[in-house]
Image (spheres, rainbow, N blue to C red):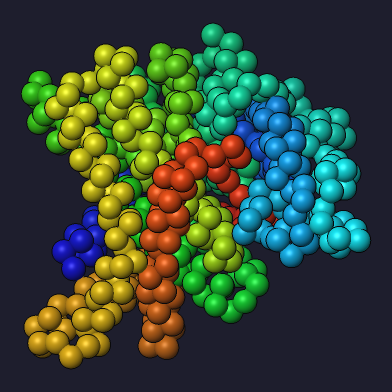
Length: 500
């Protein structure tokens, strides 16, 4: 109940921040050019290449000196070979999206068909290889697209042939820009869709911070609200995923944005007492889409961390112990949320790897002589609290339901019901207000139940991530899924009028 109460207060504060701090439309028109070097790492992203190019190329044409780099990886071919070994000997009924989330629907369909055609119903190595080779690697798709439409010179494709994951791809692309690159390295996912108005608002925000600080801000984060397209396979999938998208948006508004604001404030008001400064800063949890890092800062830090499974939150750890401000743009991008429960659980399973890697971040920072023991202890305490809060979200919600509906003393039932109300009904009403929607009683009840269902399921992915780490370590395949073949393009109305 306390956590949801604080969350409601943070949500109100964030909405006020957005309303006051965001620049008016058109304020970015007179800003001196600040090059934005967009880097999009791709791995098994074949269906998304053309839509990404069609979105980002005309967008960056509006901003002088900006570039777009698509960076593919040789890991894709190596992981395909590993996938073939895993598929060899599989029965048709065992080739499922749950077991092989790295495969798209078309690949799964053809592999099942190939297995079913054999006399034993078991997929052979030759058949698995023949099927997967029908599907071009992402690097080939990128090259075909660039050749087909003769994209402008500021659009590039580079190939990373090392063993690293997304962070290593981004670092390779940044290095290919050269040592004299100025402006910002901007990391986006292939399905990110920042609007022109959001980019102009970001540049206006950067200019305002530069005017206040005397230099361009080191790191700027575009946060996102999450939405679904309603394409889930069943009514239950669509309802739960809508609720999960709202829950993730609430995390952004109630936790992420307030955390960034507090962090930026504290890093500019250093007391000189390491433990006090660490306590004031908390922990910056950067996000790997909409992350803008000034080129010289990116080079000085050695890029994104490549020693962890994921890169975004661990990068925030390094920024935290070094006391580098992360400024949050008073505006939201629009990000796709999973459309079915399987992908929702897989996403949580993947994202929670960040929390499991924080001890590794501390060990690396200490090895690099960055931060004091007290600072590391303070940051790891915050990380542990956030990770445990996520792990406990589902069980805590279930416990509140039991306490509210069971035969317990009235004060216990009232407190449990109040916690459920603050966690589901109150934020649904507040979100609807920011979106200019007037909910009927039925709509409010429906959306609140969807949020409740999402909370009950919220801990499943993290629990699976913990089990994976205990039993399998980091795993041989990149911890991602790319089964979603659609994206939700934001409108200018979405990015301009949803008041973060």
